[in-house]
Length: 253
Figure: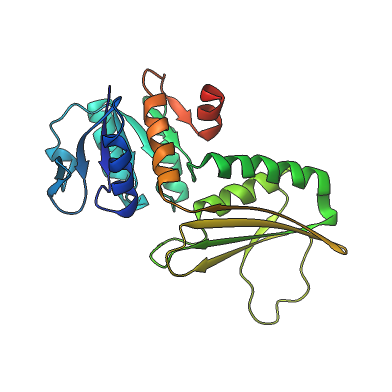
């Protein structure tokens, strides 16, 4: 039995994680933390990690990057593992996560979907095959409540493309005005926000007289909630370190 705490439990993703957790006999959601205290489906919710008294094996965080300090402090104090699902971390925060992973098992990914992580591999392979003869543009679409842009997944896909070019590409975020001709060293990244779009990512390789497009569309948040629970279970008994979806998929496939 894995005892989890859901950080950001009152949010859309937190509620989806709780729903799936309560249907899983091997997982117990012992507590939640959010901006206000209360109860959700029988689970006590606190407005501070300092108030949590339950034994927690893993924290699943779907709150925000601004909550990182509180998360790390709780994890270090309790010795629990972390599944970090928020996006928008600063460079300094990423260093904090790396440092925490020296003493704790930390799972961090921009996207918990198996399909997206397959897309990441296909995108890298396409970039290696097509090379500089094709311009690369990434378009991501999300609901109108998403706060950060571009998405963490868009950055993840851009990094996969850039690996094929030894990191030589530069990211360009949207275009406006007289920007001149497109440079071959660019990877364009564009964010669209509207309605209730769960998450769509498209990577376009545009060459002379042909276009190759690789894309993924999430139709339900449960895709990500399921991945978070798989990660929480997989982390049990792991040594301190920074893990991602590649590690998880290698362990379950």
